[in-house]
Length: 488
Ligand SMILES: Cc1ncc(COP(=O)(O)O)c(C=O)c1O
Image (cartoon, rainbow, N blue to C red; front, side, top):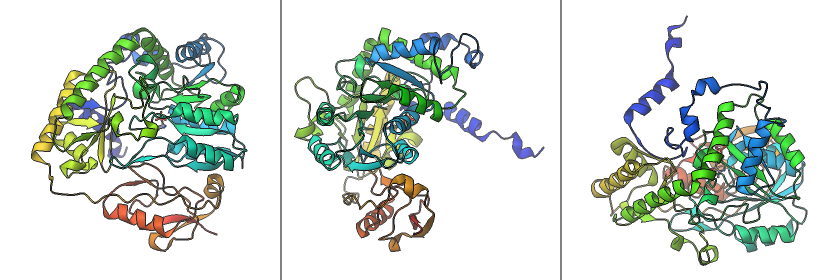
């Protein structure tokens, strides 16, 4: 045997990670078992790692206990039907596109859609018409799409098969869904919602309204992110006559593994039960912790928090309506003269505090149902110390350029995916059709998509990101020296 085979690098890294004793301000919400449903905590996990045995039903054609568990999930969330997902929200979003669109058919989509939507567009062959979200200049982040822009896009695309939106986004902004639904339904278009970050919404009135209550036709939510189930387990809900449940089920049976984990499915069943029984109390505590973190961080000089007041008037809630998830804390550190990446690295390395996300301007902490007071105390302490010891208030980080306008589309993402491609130097790529996507965070809105024409403005923007060490997601060549284009 090759002695290298004695190594188990991933396992070792996980063990090392656990020994560090990090504070957890990130998903999954169960926080290493602390908020796992109590019934699941009592079980011997390995004994439950089973397969389709008598009495245990079958995820791809459920008719027994899985069907019943899905019915209970649909009932709790107020949907006509729910589907268990073991390949994350990713598989659910792909299935919705595959069920709703045939090759060449139009779909209107928010430009800040998750990358699984790109996969869904490639699988289905659908032709996207994008709506660019509003941006919050001080945080650089997207804040949802404007209903007037959606209406204008639907006027141009009267045959669109549906409208795809993200609600809430990664930063917890959950704005304007009812208006978008109103615009889409007036034209009989189904609204498909990526609610990956909103599985906890229905269980406390201080949270934004859930997408189903806002009239969404289909919703996919990552129960693992905020609902307390195991990583990779999600729910897809249908609540509409505008989409065929049969086609969605068929698409899921094609896309998901044929060996679904009973641990993941049992965790969905028990997380649903826990939210039904204790969701309000769990979230009350979570909201209190989040409020105290917000209050403490609000006093730290140089730090700015994303609050509802930061949202433009058109996206603000009315009265009791909430348009920002208070458990998602977006911490802008620009005033400290640090980038979000630098602050997150300091938090992790020096203070052993891990957050969910860092981008150029911000660090995002998630106060999930498993987070404890100690996690919160350490987050506040770490940021206070960073503000005191590491801040360089005189240093002004270069402002990120505004993203360039959307380029011209020359082919669908599917046509681009299946066309021969080659790498060309980025500086001389103008006029070529791009074969890959590229997005910087913030705003997390792709500047180029497969099938779109590269413009001089896009090249300039990507080069500016590179100069400022802003990571760009998507391109195979992470140095951005070259970019993949269609070999025409
Ligand atoms: C907005 C959004 N949509 C979809 C997904 C995919 O969800 P999952 O990880 O459950 O597949 C993510 C994951 O981070 C996301 O942030």
